[in-house]
Structure formats: structure tokens, C-alpha cells
Amino acid sequence: MSFGSEQEPGVSAQPDALTRGFVFNHSMLRVKDPALALDFYSRVLGLRLLRKLDFPEMQFSLYFLAQAVIAEGAPQDPGERTAWTFSQRGVLELTHNWGSETQADFSYHNGNTQPQGFGHLCFSVPDLDAAVAWFDQQQVPYVKRPEQGKMKDVAFIKDPDGYWIEIIEPARLKQLGRQ
Image 1 (cartoon, helix red, strand yellow):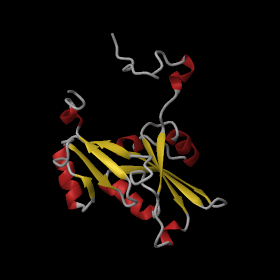
Image 2 (cartoon, one colour):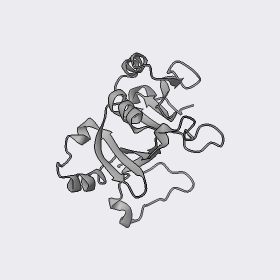
Image 3 (cartoon, rainbow, N blue to C red):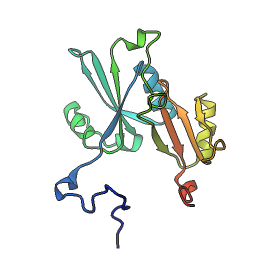
Image 4 (spheres, rainbow, N blue to C red):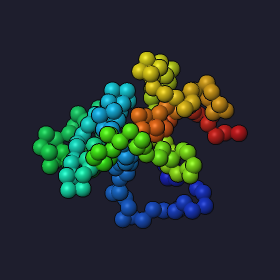
């Protein structure tokens, strides 16, 4: 028997057939300075820029990033690549409202200060110790190192805008949530 879903109050026993083709495509974060954010997500976390879209009349740009292996399959034609980008899974959209990078006191709410809302992104890595060493080498700020707190083997780092990013090694989490 195949796995369908854990059951909890509010979970639909059977999704409607109409939703079968729905794909979670992307999440969006607003960023103050796209150069800093793009450097972090491409150099430190290894994402590739799939597509940049500018909207001069509304003064903002969108940057769509994904894992390098996904980017390898991207079409060359910009229109085809746009459609292809919106058909992928696990894409990160960075939205830059023009001019924010020049405002010294400007920042976005990261969701973890009051009032809380958005929490974090999560990246799984094949080797948590190697990832932590890499983040240390890159001088990435931590919210929590893997050895700290009650939940071991889970790290939280911050991106240039202060958003939290959880870092996990799936093989280390087999006992997570078990009493």
C-alpha cells in the first residue's frame, strides 16, 4: 500500500481530482539589495538564476532561482524559459523594489520578530558538518548552530536580509518528533 498522507483534523481524505496537476512552484522573499541576495543564494547556497523579470512601470524586479541541476534544463529562448521556470518545483523568487538598496534604514520584517508570521526557508544538505564548515568559511551568521538548543542536528542561518534558513541533513532526522 502506498503512502497518501498523514491524517490530522482538517486534512482532506482524498484531494479532488482537479488538483492532481497542481505543482508548488515557488516562494517569494522581498530583498533590499539584489546584488547581496543573489551573491548569497548563488555562491553560498548554490542556486542558479533561472530568470530575471523587470517591471519598470511598477519599479520592481523578480529573480527566480533554483538548484543548479534544475537550471541545466532551462531553454535558451527567454519566453520559453519564463514558461519553463513557472513549471518547475522548489523555486525561490526574490523580489526587489527599486531604490530600497539605497535607503540606509530600510529592512524587511523577517517574520521571526514580533508579530511573528513567516518563519523560514529550509535547505537539506548531504553532509551537515561540511555545510556548517562552509558557512563558517563564508562568515554566514547563525541563528542557531546544530549543537545548540534542544533540537540537535538542525542549524539556522541568516541571509543578507535577515531571513532565517534552516539547514538539515535528512539522514540525521529519523528520530525527530518521536517520543
